[in-house]
Length: 296
Image 1 (cartoon, rainbow, N blue to C red):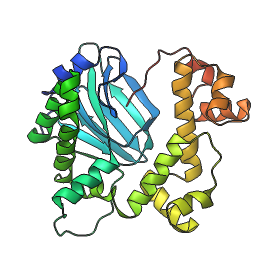
Image 2: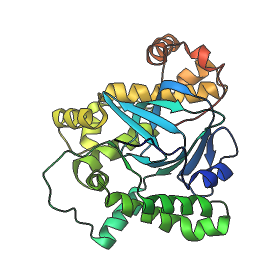
Image 3: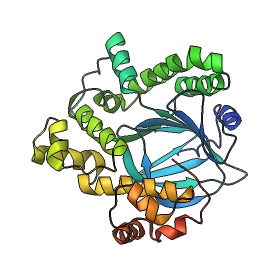
């Protein structure tokens, strides 16, 4: 009989100290943000960055296709490439969601693999996972708690944050899905992840499938096949989701519909409004009435 997950763990107090505002809070270390969420939210399309996410309290659910990933005080989540997914927030003022999100630094990951020569043990071949959830071991929880503690002070952040993140990556590599994290640094997964990062940072530009396939060093048919396996969608639908989730953030921050449509790469405001409604179930104007939040 499985036990219920803990309501909180040793990261909660440290995250609460750093997350002074509702929603997303930056920290002293680039690539690390913390979230404080006190309102429940139904499954909503969001763009998850390539990241390791640890939860101090509360619970969230990510959905990719027909796969559901619960992450909470007893389970961490890893998203290897940037992925549009549905995100459900299970939170209240009494039991807020407190999370720390650590960007996966490919240079640091490759450095780690080179230094310690982490060879995966022999096992049956299996496809690398774009997203995985795993039980949070005590040593990874302890490292996460030390990370959020050092982020409270600039000198400690400079001295300790990078090496603590490196330790956390090592522990994930030694976990049940370490091969999926390792794949991010080498082979077809690495090649595609480079393309996905390019697409999410330059999403306003017009992109040709042939150019993206060439960037991944693949033929167009092979690129389509690997892309669908990794993201669960086509390059066109992926780019559309990236643009629209970014548009939602801009609208919630007070942007005008016409300006936002242009800023995320749409030439036609009417097309933007149609596709926005199709994805979010409401017109863009509805998002301008919401409290600005960036959630993962």
